[in-house]
Length: 354
Ligand SMILES: *Cc1c(COP(=O)(O)O)cnc(C)c1O
Image (cartoon, rainbow, N blue to C red):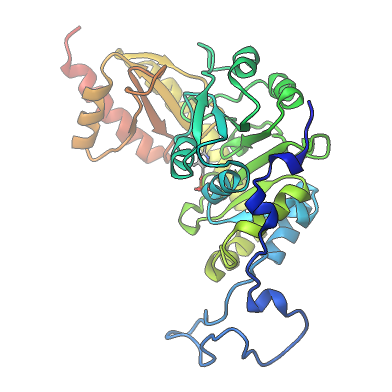
């Protein structure tokens, strides 16, 4: 591997002088803030949000840094991990010239972000058992392949990808390997943040949307070496994480035990749900899951999807996704929600004639 960050970054980004916000230019202990055209009188309800939030989310990064044993300058906090995905394109991919590599079936946002940024997507499909194929990846990548997206545990298949294979790919790939760990908390496996000190070319994505139960806040994280994080900070909008989101994240980080309990509950329900689903006649296969959802192969996905809608239960129909034919992706719910789902599916089972 020959990794040179300088060579991967777009020239316009290297030359960019970032917007300098009022709050980032001032450092000190002032008492009267007349620098940012805020409303000094307050907000139209008891709690005040009249001040711009911390553009660098210093307190959040300190807390997360301590949890994950990394320095703050190796952490990016964004408006969902989707913001980090978009920033990767804007920093590294020259529209119409560069390309990125994805490993389908996988998360749809990589392709959407690529399309928005006018960047070609190359595909190195997962193998039949949904593992990475380093040979295919090698043969598809070219000198303009800037990013390789690896999602582990993978959405929509649910499995964690083989760690040794990922490491082998990181060692060989000349661009940035992005490891999306949105579901890693449900896997009981360590993830790749600890590998950042060994490899300059990885970006690890995490999110508060899944295990932390905070999808509505829109907060995601990227971990990488500080040179890459600097580039994200240069390109991001100055106040990309709202004050209300920052306060809530700080509070959530004080309640780690509650998050851990929810994760255990999801893992317990996942096993119960998988077992119950596997007993249904029209279920052909339950894919093993390290995530908070289960991919289920059936012989009539569309009919089941419609039936569930009629019962006011929404699942994700993935039956038209290549390699997921006949599949529904079902998020693990509460015990009651899962029971309602199984009840509806049993009723349907009794109504069909085999
Ligand atoms: C849900 C999900 C995310 C989370 O995105 P946010 O923008 O942080 O809500 C990221 N990656 C994958 C693969 C996901 O499934």
